Length: 167
Image (cartoon, rainbow, N blue to C red; front, side, top):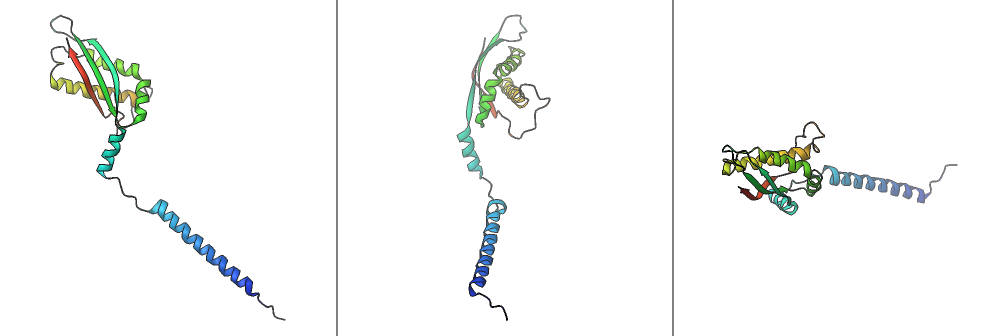
């Protein structure tokens, strides 16, 4: 006697095969969507908007120190410095290393000559030196690391004098 095929069993096999094919197609589509799909880079306007939203200014307070003098008299400099960053985590790091940052800035300021520190070019150079010193402190974890990692975006984007008085 020949075996008779049950009509319900062949329908089940077809449904299972169709379900497997549908799952494979859905999996391939999901893989393409989440992994292989080309993602457009943010536009410069979007980057600028994000930076503007993340801009943070950190006040280092007032710093007073004496200056080098060629005429023998005592001269002082008082500055208030603001640090600009686009990363909110940097503020915590600056507060952690505040004594070291302030010390480095005071060393830079006290090495200045009283006759030249008021010149705009010297002030601009001093701002760049302060920025470099602060970034170096933050990038080396207060000097623990031997050399700072080379980053395209340093922690501190700019340094500003909120006040600058030489006496």
